[in-house]
Length: 292
Image 1 (spheres, one colour):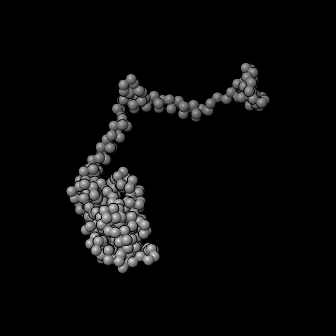
Image 2 (cartoon, rainbow, N blue to C red; image 1 turned 135 degrees about the vertical axis):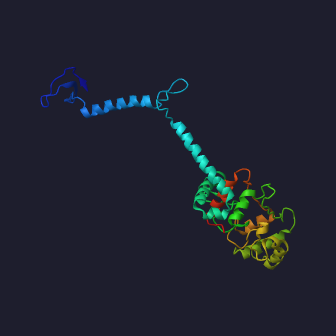
Image 3 (cartoon, rainbow, N blue to C red; image 1 turned 30 degrees about the horizontal axis):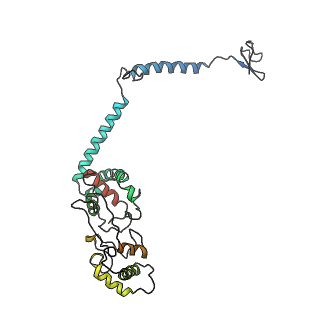
């Protein structure tokens, strides 16, 4: 690019050039369009008016408030307070309502679902997964394997007091360590594990006396898991012939659980979360479809 510093008049358009030339092309010194200039000047006027009317200029410790005294921060805080007041009102209604009333009242149900979804993500998803599908050692909340019951009241009680949480009202179900504490002989553990596996539809070890395993089961396990192996909820004993095995459905996993059982702990959310949120969680968890 060259600058000849010579302003000439373009022969074709009759417009004076700026003196700039590029590869033989000369830049014409056309004025800006009137409409563009008018818009530009209007924007300047608008900006000056905005500076006067609304907060705009920062100062050392504050800012100019403008003649209208408008503040988006104040508006946002007011909206937050209004939301809190509305939430508090619905929360009070939620606490006073029964779980069945919540499920049948659209406004309370919508509030409980939204509140429960947020609380679940913050407090429960780390163990049960974002969709409640669980992991090994953490129950799947979408299936029918509810060892403490899957009704709204059952879920609410479990959430409120926890499982082996140390709360006075906590759900407690303890399985003896038949191997670690030498309550059964090694052969007996093999027999009863194979018996349970056979009833659960799993492959068993060859040569194991399943009849002897049934005797061991009836003498040591039936009191909690039931004679039919379907479990008893009052003890929190799982169904051994169902599809849900918390620590793995295999002969090896069954043996391991009989030898030295693993037990999980669920916190008591009473005192950690407000009553309205605990109820909301019960409604939200029940909505996964695995409840009763």
